[in-house]
Image (tube, rainbow, N blue to C red):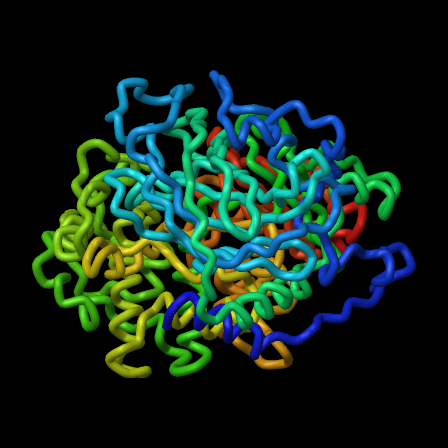
Length: 599
C-alpha cells in the first residue's frame, strides 16, 4: 500500500478525541490549544513584514553573498503575515544540486567525499491548502539516487509580504537522512513564487540528531516551478486538515508551571546539553507539554515537524508492539514460537537456535553471543559486517554469525542483530496468518499507527536494499518521530493500556509485563537494579530514592540519546538528543507532584 493510500485511509478512519478535566487541578479542555486551526510552530516569531533584512526579494531573485546559514527566523512563517495571493500546486524542481552547496563539518570526518556536501536531486509535488499550508505529496522516508543522502519532507507554510513585489513566499522543513542509517540532519527551504515561476531556493541545515556527524549546510539554488494538477490533491488536503485536527492536545512546556503550580519545569530537559538536545516533551493528563527546537542559528521554525531518529526505540514501538498485536489478533502463545521455525537461515548459524523463542529475542536473551560485557557485542560498528551489509541475504547471515554461550533466557546481552532476526521471524509468521503479501511493518502501520492517528511520517521505515531499499524492515532501528508521534504512542501504551476506540489492540498480559506491572514477570536482569522485558528497559525506585513506596518505571531507549519514559502514574517524558545522555529522575520527581506515584 502506498504512502498516499495510507494517508487517504487516515481520513476515513479518524475520529475526534474529546478530552475532559480529570480533576479540579488539571487544565480544562477549553483551555487546551488543540488542533484544527493551530499553527504548526510553537514559538511566536516576530514578523519580518516591514523589517526583513535577510532573504529579501532581491536576495532570492538575484542572489547574494553568503558564507553561512542565516537566522532560522528568516525562513519562518511570520505570525502577523497576510494570506497568500497565489496558490502553489505542482512540482518544485531544484537545479544544480550536484554542483552547488556549502558544508562546514563540525563533528566527524572533515574530509568527506564531495557529494556529501550536495543535496540529492529534488523534484517533488506540493499542494497548498486553506490556511496557507504547503503540503508535500510524498511523506516519510524518500529514497533517492544520491550516494549518501535520502530525504524526508514535511509540510510548511505560504504567506504574503508587502515587499515581495506581488510574489507569495513559502518555506518548509526537510531532513537529510544518511543512506541506510537513522542519522538525521534537519533543515529548512524557502522561496518566492507566483502562478508562473519561482525565485531561487535557499536551503540550510543547522541541526542534527546523530553522534557521528555534525555539519552546517547551505546554498542558493536555481529552481523551476511546474504548475500542474497533482493526483489526489483533494484527498491530500483533506487528510492534512484531519492530521492537524487529530494532533494530541499540546501546550508549551512553560505552561506546565501555570497549570500545576509548584512544578519545576527546568527538570524537563535537565541533564542534556542544549547543543545535544533536539526536543523534549512531557505528557500528563491528556496534554503534551513540548519544548522549542534549538538550532545553531536560532529556534527551528517548524518544531512540530522536526523529525528525530528512533534508533532503538523502534525495538519497542515497532517490533515489540508487532508481537503484542500478533498475539492479540491471532494467537496468545505467539511469543513462545521458535525462531528456527520461521527463519530458515538459523540452521546455518554457529550458535544454537533450537530452543530460542520470539520472547527470548525480545528480552535480549538468546544465549548466542560472544561477550556478556555491557554493549561489547553491540558496538562493533567498524568490524562487524552486519552494520555495513545492505542486502537481506548478507545481513541475516551476519546477524546469525555468533557462537552459542548459555541457554536461552538466562543472560541479557544487548544485540540489534537479534532484533533483525526476530523482525524476520515475525514477518514470516504473519505471512502464515495474513497471506503471502503480508509485511510486518505495514501490519503495524495498519493495525496500530493508523488507528492511533499518527501522521504519515511514521508510515515508512529503513529496509534492506532489496527492491530499491524496499526489502526487509530493519526492526531494531530505522524510524523517525516528531513529538506528536511519541505523545500518541506513549499514551497508548502507558495510559490507554493498548486500547483504541474501546478495542483491545495489544495483548494485555504482554503489555503489562513490558511496563513492569506484572509482579510475576520482570523480564531479565540487564544491570544491577535494572530489568529488560519485551524490548522495554526498566528501573526501580523506592524509599532509598526518597519515595514512599517501591515502583518501576519502563523506558524505550535509542542509541544517541532517545528516551521515552513511561511512569506508572500515567505520565510520560520523552526527548531526542545526540550526546548519549540517558537521564530522567528529575522529571519523575516533578511528575510525582502532579499525579503521585505512590498510593
